[in-house]
Image (cartoon, rainbow, N blue to C red; front, top):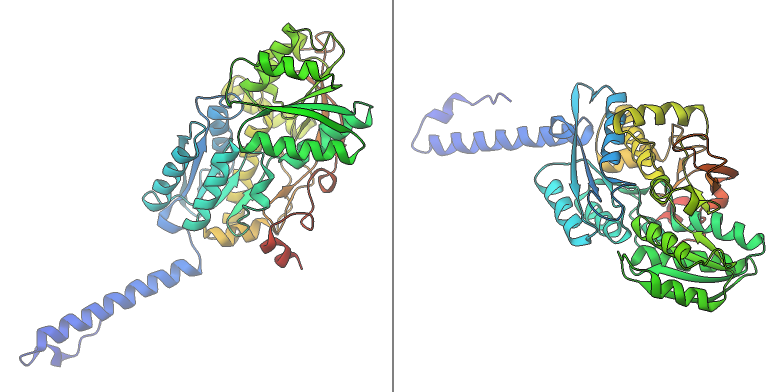
Length: 425
């Protein structure tokens, strides 16, 4: 910015001090002008930066991990790799299923790397921590993979944080309700001993009891654990009709495998996997997983749109996508569309824009982002096929019915996000 300096500035004993004052004032004016221009819109720091904080090496890495990175890169490619001539950049980090590690990555990205959006948190403890930090640092955050409904209840951050793929209410309102209505009324839970497991057990138990069932007991298992024998024997001894597995990833796989070894299903009890992924079924094999009832937000063979995108994903990764990986793609794509639509990556403005947009893509059906930050969409009740029913690799699910989003997810009125309740009035 050019500053017009009066000729008298250079005259008299205090002329240099006066010049310095004018130049400093001019610089301040220029910086203020730049700040005002940024506040008015535009892409900050000449790039749209997306950071992904994932499980890259642990119990959830197969359902998340490198596949999620590939899915988000597909969304970036779909947008042409840039918005308004500014590149879209992608970073990734491993939270190792530890909230403090994920938090440290998020703080560095916010403070030093000017990341605009953080995706991830496929661990509820890490997810809650990331949502708190991004709210504090004014960075957009979209959780995919962390199931706890606390993200849109007591830990909500609706101005900057969204919960996209599924939550514990949607899982319980599918699997638990369906099984109780089929007559499987007595339940015993084996629960991953951290935020996610306890939250999932609570919501599933509430759904069981609300539909006329009863919970006869529960046991908390360390996360992660390779040996579920003692927990399964307690569940077997309870006599419950259903053993509810409030866990995920390799914990679910180990639970199901060992239940088969103990002859639990053959003895007449049923297993309810409250969070099962395509990669779990693939790892278990259909002989072990057949007949399991599950709730999912996505299945690659759902319709033509899902099949087309999943085929492209498989070309890149060698496997079909899980619902977390498909949700990552969807959330990144819709975020980038919102940035392009309003011409800025200002986090609160982008999140506000997402709340005005219908969410329809390869992942989401009838999606909308609510005032509490929850992306409500259709969920699907499914059952794992028998080996005889499956026609090819990855042909693992039978879709039993669609659960409309307003039935699958908790209402804002029943939640505890006071900011969302105020906004919704």
